[in-house]
Image 1 (spheres, one colour):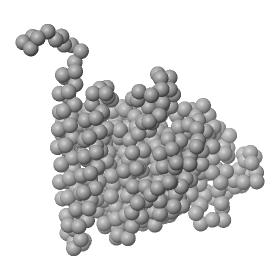
Image 2 (tube, one colour):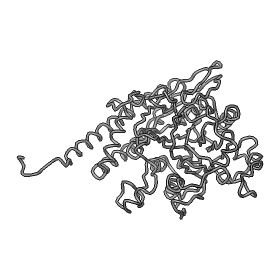
Image 3 (tube, one colour):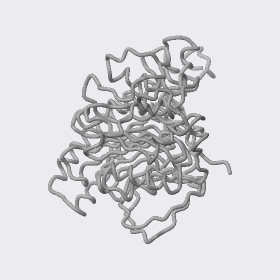
Image 4 (cartoon, one colour):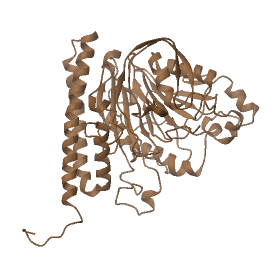
Length: 474
C-alpha cells in the first residue's frame, strides 16, 4: 500500500513570557507534494464515544475511542479518501494541537526500532487526541500511550499548548520519542528535522519514551556518551538538511534574534532561542508567510542571482495548503482564550483570519468541500490569488501587500471589538455571539478577497504581451 504523507511544514512555538500579551502560541504551515490539495476550515462538534472503533483510511491504523469528546476547530482535507488530516485546532478545554511537522530519524536508530506501517500517523493524530485532552501534558501522555500500544508510522513532530505551557514532541522511531517544554521566555523554529538537543531526564520540562536510554546504550547509538543529545543521536545531518530544512530555522532566528550571527547551512543551530523583543501574532505570521525576503535567497526577489534564489527551500510555497496560529490568551477562561488564526492556500499571499474557537460553525465559504476551482470557496479564491500574484509578482505584489496589511488591521480591531461586545455573555449566549461574529468577519474578509482578486485580474489583463500600441483609436 502506498501511503499519502505530507512531507514538509515549518513550525514556531512561543512561550507566554516571550509574547506581547502573555499568550502562548503554536503555529505551522501545512505543505503538500502538490500545489492543489484543498483544505476546509470547520468546527468538529462534541461527541460522546461508546467504545467506538477509529480506523484510518490512510494506513489502516485503528484504535478504540471512548468517553466524552470535546468540540474543536480543524482544517481537514476536502478529499478524505487518504485520511482526514485535520492538522490543527483548539478544543473546548482551551488546548491547542498542531500535528504534524514531518521529521526524519537516521537509519541507525531506525534499524533497531523501525516505523510501524499501521501505527499512528499524521492523518489520525488530531482526530484521536485533541477531543480527549484538557492540558498539553495530557496530550503528550495520550500520544505516548497510543505509541506504546500501536507504534508510530512516521517520524513526526507535534506541537501542543494550553494557556500555561507550550510543548514540542518528536516521534523519532517506531516507539521512541522525546518531548520538551518550551521555556516561557523563549521561542523555537523547527523545519522537518529533529530539533530537541540535550535532554535532562531529571527535569519536569522533559518527557520521553520508556526505555529510551537503555535502547540507545544497548545499540551503542550515542556518539557523545557524556550527554544525551536527542538530535545528535536520533536526527539527520544530510545534504537535504542543509538546503531544505536548516535555512528555514536560520531565517526565523534571523527575524527574531538580532544576535543570531549564524549561517543558513549550519546544522547545529540551537533549538531554543530568546527573541530580542516580545513576539505578537503578526511576527509569527510574518515568518509563516515568508520566502526569505531581504536576502539573496528570495525566489521572488531582485537580490542575488538565479543560483542563490533557488539554493534553499523557502517557508511559504505554492504547495502550502494552509497556515495557522493557535493563540491561547492569558488570564481568560477557555471559552474566551482561544483564537485559531487560519490562512488558506499560500501563506505568502493569504491573510490569517482570527476565529474565536468557542463557536459552532465556520462561514460556508471556509467550510466548502469543492475539490476543483470554485468562486464560492475561500480556499480556491485564495489559491487563485496566490497563483496570479506569484506569476505577476512585480505587478501584483504591492496591491496584495496592501490587502494583507488592511486584513491585519481589521483582524486586530475585530478581536478587540468582539472581546468588548461579549464581555457580559456566557455559556450558550457567548458561543452564539462568537459564532455570529466569526462568520460576519469571515464574510468581510471574503468580500475584500474578491475585490483584490478582481484588481489583480484587471491589472494583469492590461499588462498582456498580446498588445500593440499605435494610437488612441487602435
